[in-house]
Each structure stands twice: as structure tokens, then as C-alpha cells.
Image 1 (cartoon, helix red, strand yellow):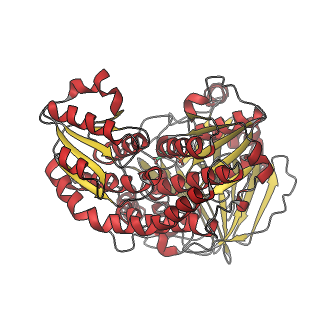
Image 2 (cartoon, helix red, strand yellow; image 1 turned 180 degrees about the horizontal axis):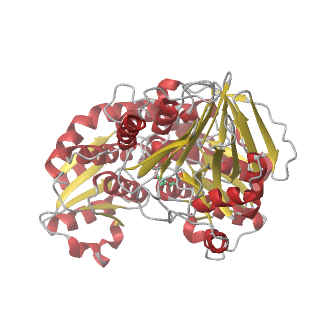
Image 3 (cartoon, protein in one colour; image 1 turned 45 degrees about the horizontal axis):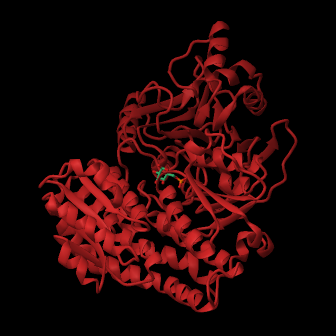
Length: 620
Ligand code: G6P
């Protein structure tokens, strides 16, 4: 986790670094810090809390140092900065980055985990080096110090050779101004190319305001930046020839676009995310074009089994994918949480297609589960939103969701885009294997094409009603979510959203299992959200709603327009437009996202940055 940015160039860089961090805050935000080279050493400021706290601390520091303008060194400025999501060591100023060797001349920022940090630390301490934090990252500064002999890049390369784990880091040295050196092992590191200045960061938005020319640092590579150039080598120093790419994202996308929060903006962007993800892949009425995915028809025709691995919200998208693939294409699907899958010695082989669903493409557990599939001889497909992410490099094929940049930590638009991508894949498999009639395929293609409009309509139609509902229930202490079949993943995701952003305990259960436990929780004060959209087992679901009512609990149902039975049975009903029943999850989640959002807002919480969570989990 964590976000890194580094700058070297002709402009004072404090503001460049802090605003860069503001675009990375979604990666972690429990503390932050920066270090800038000044003529007589290093100016370093760190603060516990979000970036507003860092700005405050910088103001105080500036006054203490007695200079208004940041001093240059021969016309150049060099600095690194970091926003942290704690892994090793508590959230304290001493554990905030940048970290240094004891002379303070070497400063580093790191994202990820150094697995052999304890051994290295003992070794370095035995040499007499003194540590000032509890972090794993600090060993990097001491290792560089151990190897530094005037050439920072060489010292970084030597340090890299001794580190195990998954991480990227950037270093600078007070005696080599105008120079940054870094290394990447699995967690992302991207260079931004400017004019007389260069940037390096964990993600492109950190420097997107200054340049759109980017150079990706790959695994096992060492990078050196000066104001006038960037060089990348492999870990042994052999040059890597890689040209820059131009980023075409809209800068506006990184801003809130008129909404109070990124989460609300991103909820409203969902119809567009779906349209982008599906429309050009549905070029005609009779099927799906997934040629951009990179798996041949012949291969897809012969897949024997599919294994889906994912974490968090992406896991919920996978559950829906499983229903669609099994129902439409009749291929057996195994589905597991990546962190469980990777340690249960699963049976996986060359006949399997392993699908890793990960919006960031960087989730450590999902990457490890995908690798396990690859090592077992399976073909690996990544379903991801981020071009160039690690998942795309590790996989044989990639199915991109095209949700655009998502800043809110609680996933919304990337989730629905994943669900849509899984529908496309399921339909393509069904089409190739002739498991659905052409009429049925046409109905589903038309249904998918209509989804963006229906989402738009749903968001407009239910927003006010859901806001009122949220107001009435914002002080409740527990919510139960019940659903069956395709409604169950909707419940799991709705319950996760509410607990993530409002901190209210929730439970999501298969409604048929209610009698085996959760029913004991029910009393008059319990709101029970029942996903009761049209399906072949709606009757069964409605019986469960009756059972909940019989215990005096308050039932709030998500139903399909025209389904009077739901309206009659539930205490309150929120209706979504009719679509094919297997496609309903993509609409049914909308009121539940809005409910989570408004409950959290009524409680005065920061929905974009829920406590303890991070958008990209690059540690296991
Ligand atoms: C974190 C995020 C979630 C996300 C999960 C998996 O927990 O806060 O929103 O669903 O990681 O992330 P991925 O990038 O693999 O989809």
C-alpha cells in the first residue's frame, strides 16, 4: 500500500509533492511526509494524519527554518514524499516516511513490504547502525548507506539485491542533488517525463497535472532520474530500452466534478462505466466480441473448468460471474477468496482458466492466487481496470473494465464494470459453445445494451427515496441483508458498502440459511434489507421476507417494477426497472450503494476515506 512521489527538476517542489500526494491519498492516509534537499542537507517534515496535517506541519517548519522560498541547489530541486498505510509499525511520526540512515543524508520512501526486514535489521544493527523507526522500510535506507560510495544508483542496485518481498522505493542522497534512484519489485512505479524535470510515483494521477508522458518501471528494474533524463536498467545494470507512452485520461476525471464526494460522483458515473465497458463489445445483436481479450475462440471452446479468484468487492463481482457462466455456458466454476485460495493447495491444472478479478490489478493476494494458477499450468485471465498493472503483466490475457479512475475507497463504478465484464465473458462462452439459443442471446445482448439507460433511470428515480430511508435509519445499530441466488452477492456487496463507509455492523446471509442462525438476531429494531428482484425463486424469497416480518423486524425490499407481491409483503420497497432476471444485480446494487452513502453522510463520516481501509491492498 502507500503512495510515493518524487521530483527532480528546475521548480521548487514542495507544492508539487504535496499536491501529488493528494492524488495518491486513496492508497493510504494514516500519515504522510516529505524530504527535500536544501543546500546544507535535508528538510524533512512528517505528520500523523491526512495531508492537511502535513500542510500544517510544513507551515510550522518553514517558519522555524526562517526561509519563505524553498532554496535551490545549483538551480535544481530534489524531493520525495509519501502517504502511508501502516503495515509494519504503528501510526506514529517516527514511522512515517521518508526514512533515513542515521546520518540523515539518505532518504527513502517505500510502498509494499520487505519480507526479510527482521534479518536485515539484526545484521545492520550488528554493524552498529542505529534505527529510529519500527518499519520494515527503514532497512532500505541503511542498506543504501552501507553500499553508497558516491553513486546512488549503484547503491540502490546493491540494496535491491539484498531485499526480499514486494515493494517499490525511491531514494535520494544529500551529496548527490539533482538525482533520484529507485527500484521496483511488483508494486507499481511510474515515471513522468517533463521538460527539464522528471517525476516518479506509484500512480499516474500524482503527476498528471504536469505531464502525460509516462514510462513504466517494470519488475526487477532500477531507475535513475535527473532533471534532464531518465534511465532504466535491469537489476544487473543492463539498460532497458522502453519508450514513453502518452496518457489520454481526462484530468477532470480526477476531480469531484461538482459532487460533494468522489463516492457520489462515481455512483453517478456508473452508467458511463458500463457503456464504456460493454457497448463496443456488443457490435451486433447476435453476440459478443471479446477479441481484445487475447484468448482464442478455440481455447474458449475447450475450457473445462473456470476458477475465479478475487478479494473484497471484486469477489462479489466474481460470484455474479459464476452464476452467469454456469447458467449460460454450463461450464463448472469454482470461486474463492484469493487469500484463502492461495494457501489451500488447490487442485488446478492445464484444463483450467483461472480468472483474477481486481480493479487495481495490484492486490497482493489476487496476484498470488493467479500465479498459483499459472504455476499449475492453467491459462490466466485478468479482469482489471488499470492498464499496465501487475495483473496485466502476470496474466496470459486481459479483459479490461473501462470504469475510468476511481478515487473513492469504497468501490462502486469499478464493481459494476466488473459485473458487466463477467456477463460479457459468460455470454461469449455460451455463444461459442452453443449453450443458448440465438433468440436468448439476442434478448441478453439487448438487455445488456439497455443497462446504462436503466442505471441512469434508477439512480434518478430512487436517490431521494433512499436518502429519506437513510435518514430514518442512520442511527440503527445493525442491518441484516438477505437474498437468494443472484440476490445473495448483491446483499454481500450492499452490506460491505454500508459497513465500510458508515461503520455500522452488518451481516449478509443466504435467505434460506436465515433459520439456521441470523433469525436469532431479529427484533423490532432490526432493519432487514431483502433483495427480492424477479427471479424463478422469488416465491421462496418472499416466504423468507414473511418470516422476518413475523419476528417483528422491519423489512426493506429491493424489488422489480411491476412486482406487486413484493410491495404487498415488505414494509418498504424500492423498485428497480425490469430487465432479464440474471442481469438485475447490476441495477439492484444502486439503491444499496446510495443507502450506504447517505447513512454515512448523515453520520458525518468521510465516505471517500473510510478509516483503516485502502483502495489498493498491495500487502497480504
Ligand atoms: C480493497 C478495496 C476494495 C477492493 C479490494 C480488492 O479492500 O478497498 O474496494 O474491492 O481491495 O481490490 P482489487 O483492486 O483487487 O479489486
